[in-house]
Image (cartoon, rainbow, N blue to C red):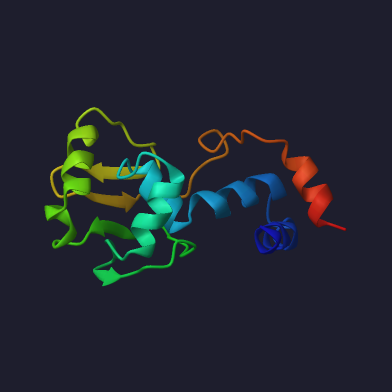
Amino acid sequence: MKNYVKAALSGAARGDSTELLMRKLETRLDSTVFRGGFAATRRQAKQMVSHGHFLVNNRKVDVPSFEVKKGDVISVKPSAKERVLFKNALLGLKKYEAPSWLSLNKETMEVTVQQMPSSKETAPTVELPLIFEFYSR
């Protein structure tokens, strides 16, 4: 978290530091997998990524903190689609609506990053100024 705060504070000249922090956190691969509807919780998304079930632009990525960019395509590995975990996720995807910054293809189980998330879509559930205060010591 300290590195994310440091990056947000150093990039504050280009924009709002709280928005930069939230954008950094939301564009992590595990967070994108969660927002794409493939996992029920963030913890589950992190484990799914760590176990190598996802491809980013047709390359295996097993690092949850991998930063996705505009235009990246995150897909479930073909071998993983046969697992019960993803068959159940496919049932849940039928009712799920992804955030506007992601394009979800429910049939192929792919998510495309259309744009970077806006501050409205990444409404924090914590007091961000307190986080900046803690890590700026």
